[in-house]
Figure 1 (cartoon, rainbow, N blue to C red):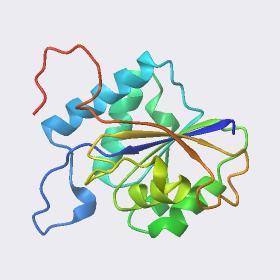
Figure 2: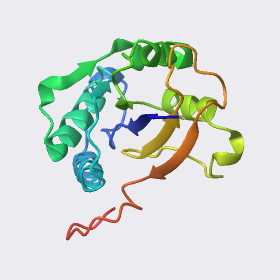
Figure 3: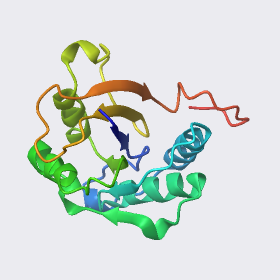
Length: 176
């Protein structure tokens, strides 16, 4: 296994008020957490070959803030409609379409799709027993086989799950 997939759930968003879910923006905490996670990735010397985001406002905002912290040009974010409410099969199709030259991919999206993808790609024994595998702005780091065109159930290895709360960044800002 030599290709890396990083799954990032969007940051904390405005409460759904019955208007268009797609248009919900990040709350102050969501922006802060996205920045925190981007800085954490930079500290890990993570530089993705591709950043692929859902087109929903909260996901795009998360991707942009994380890219700013990583010093990656926002123009390099690829917007992929199959990452918004289209299910596991469509999300896997996004991965299948990634060129083999992309060794490190950061996928920014939503639950339940990201948690379903994570549960599909790794063995159940690798998953922590928690209520939410990916809370808002959390990152899951996976090692996957080279060929993403036919990802089999349990083919990957979960390397880590990092949440803004567990992120070891020295910050003066309290986390709520």
